[in-house]
Length: 71
Image 1 (cartoon, rainbow, N blue to C red):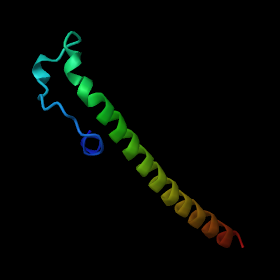
Image 2: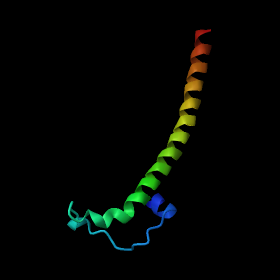
Image 3: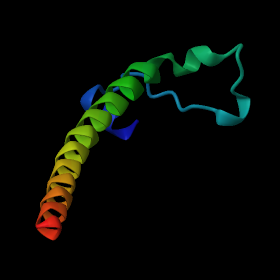
């Protein structure tokens, strides 16, 4: 949520009372839903791209090593 709040700042500075949170008063979270979704999506995309290239490198190394071992 920190990343989302940096990208999409919340104008409402009302603190969340976690001890009093229930289905009846979920409206206090409405200001944080969009920053949470944006931050989660951004982090997910960044880590997916990094993981892709790390996995690609490791798989290529493994296959190259396996082919050299067979020859």
